[in-house]
Length: 98
Image (cartoon, rainbow, N blue to C red; front, top):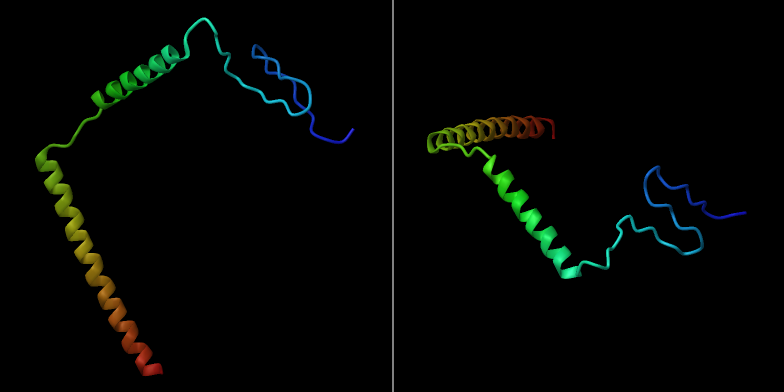
């Protein structure tokens, strides 16, 4: 028979449905709990998780931020001067050749 074979279900999971044009939803919807309560519970759990993770973040001090910014600006200036010099040299070499 030609077509796509549906693989067997995972151990301990829901069995895959058999038949044409079927979809597999790994989430079982419990009809005893209203849908808005499930949505509220999942959103509030997400927000609690975000607050917990933000509490673990260590923000840099003002002096660390100023130091890092200074390093980035100086490095950018050095690279831009280097690229300017390389570009100038290459332009002059091309003018000699052409």
